[in-house]
Image (cartoon, rainbow, N blue to C red; front, side, top):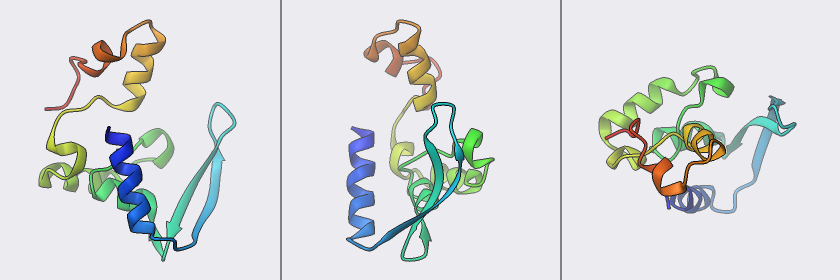
Length: 110
C-alpha cells in the first residue's frame, strides 16, 4: 500500500517531465544506484521530504536525514502511521518470517 501511494504521488509530481539520473555506484546485486531529478528537483529529496520514502544511509550517506526528521516531525506520509523499514522487512522474510509477522515487527515506528 505504502509503495503504491509513493509511486502514484511521484508519477503525479513528475507529470510527464523528463527525468534525468546520474549514476553513483552499484549495489551488492549489481543494480545502479543513482540520483534522479525532474525539473531540477532531486526526486529522492522530494520523496523523503513528503514522507514517501526513507533516507537509506547505506546509499545516501545521510544526505536526506534532516528532511526525514522534518517529515517525521510534521507527520507527513508514512509518518502518519506505523511502518517497518523495508530493509528490516526483507531480512525478516529471508529468515522465514511471514509478511504479516514481519510487518508487525516490534521495531515498527508508532
